[in-house]
Length: 332
Ligand code: ATP
Ligand code: MG
Image (cartoon, rainbow, N blue to C red; front, top):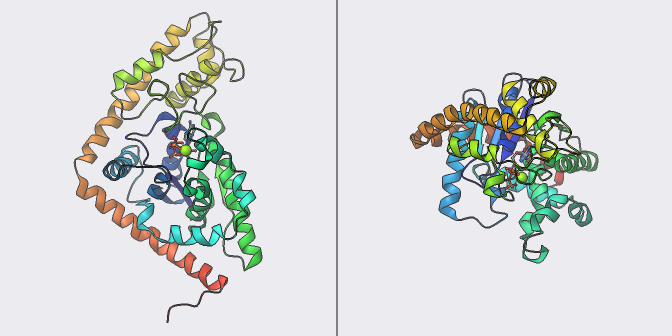
């Protein structure tokens, strides 16, 4: 079976609806047809300062959330990035294949370093897309399920794979991004043209999977919309309402057209109230399941250990090909 691979950063206590609808739900769906590798990107997390204790805690919370949403440890390798050292090792080789100007063109660095200024940002934040390319290429996956914000990094990954293949010998498979158009960019409830983000959204703009469901419902009811009060999907002129319709449709499976028809002649209040209920029904069992899993840290650690073992076997084989092709002398 062809492989799929993706990762998520343990940079918050909870994943949010953008993570879930944009990426994680596709991870769950792809498990059946593909051989899945899913990792918690702690190496990426430290591109900005992290409290060690909090990072450790969030890494286990991430594992619990992945399992609670349906990633099955019997079918999928779930692992922590730092436990598979080949990520960092291949990352270095790929850094040496990347042009400085090429790295500079990555827009996430511009966005993420905007706050403190480029001078204050770490070199790791600058080079993280190259580490991400290594994360992916090690597993030679067919697809990488991600949100729209990762498209540019997937392009870089393909460029680097191609460059390595033509400079040395065909080693890497060129991976395709797997991006679902409908939910590729879930936006901030308070700033509906911006992406919902763990690190950039305000608390009221982000719906967290592990929030108190009542709090999430309230956030939905207070979402920014517009003044014309017509429930219509039009991301250009009505980004707030369109985002709510996107979330509603994704959680219920009801097509957007149906929802538009159902709310014709009714105000935004009804739409928000009903969506708030849908959200409560969706997050409540998820929250319970996650808390249960967090009570059994021995189990979580064991799942991650097994995941790292499975991932490590694949990663070691790829890295060994790479080292040999680059011209490194094998240890005797
Ligand atoms: P950070 O702000 O720390 O970068 P994040 O919210 O972007 O956090 P990541 O861990 O960087 O989360 O991304 C995990 C996955 O979620 C990626 O595949 C990313 O494309 C996807 N994703 C993140 N935010 C959204 C969003 N608003 N809509 C759709 N997909 C998203
Ligand atoms: Mg991100």
